[in-house]
Length: 120
Image (cartoon, rainbow, N blue to C red; front, side, top):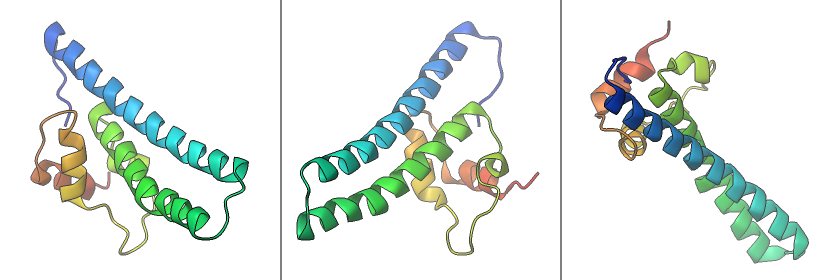
């Protein structure tokens, strides 16, 4: 998890990590919007429309969820602040989340597992 320190170099580097995670969240949201707009603009039907729909609703939505969780982790937010209710079987995979977070900051799946397990 993010560690509070007075070291200006570390804080500025940490700030860049948080910004990079926020950019990732925004780019995934923009990609979903672009897919919707393009499908409507070109009046796609059939297999092409279904393919874009599956991409947006499947892979892209999952990526966006993990990006949001990584962003919250880097900002020091508690997991329960981000996702208050999670259906059984829809819990985030800690290995996948650790990989996503490690794009911005070193972490391991044990740390992420502890973060996900905290309820308070």
